[in-house]
Image (cartoon, rainbow, N blue to C red):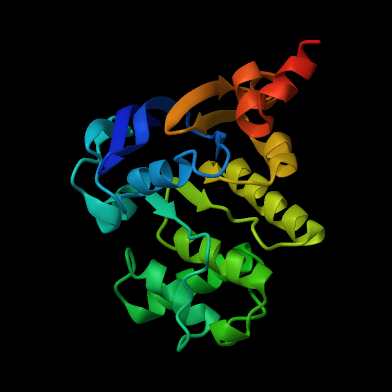
Length: 242
């Protein structure tokens, strides 16, 4: 469904993403992980259209996303969330989700109906009239997912959607992601919560210093010596093989 080929991004002399390749199959929950500074956030931003690549290409359903930008990519069926929820302080929950629904529903009544249905879907059905600043962190995260879903995507790009949540809130968010996958959604997400990643992802790509160092099923990837070294250092690798 998504193909990334030799994707490269430079910031001056720093190569933040270095000729990275990976594929995401339709219906997969695909995790993008790595230690701080690995380049995963930059790679996520390239796929989402927030940054232009310096080299390589991104194909979605066989068509290039080159030059489309965030709005164009969203219109093609890839919708993203933000690590820090981008709430509109002057809007209610319903109005915020309507902002996404307006991509396909130009009539206000149709957008309102679609947004209400999405709010129910993400567990905010009883919070429609609540101003977004009054939401809890977990609710703001759900609002981010809801606004993305309102654009009617075929693939969700989730940026650390579990950050700042307690264990019960993490469990509820993971259940929502599983439900969406059960409905046919494809998910790519950047995440630091390794326990969650191991439990929900079908496949992982691990990055370190801008390069892809592993790609495969979670249990297999986390046994890879290069991955252990990237997260824990050379001493951990030596212990692993002792």
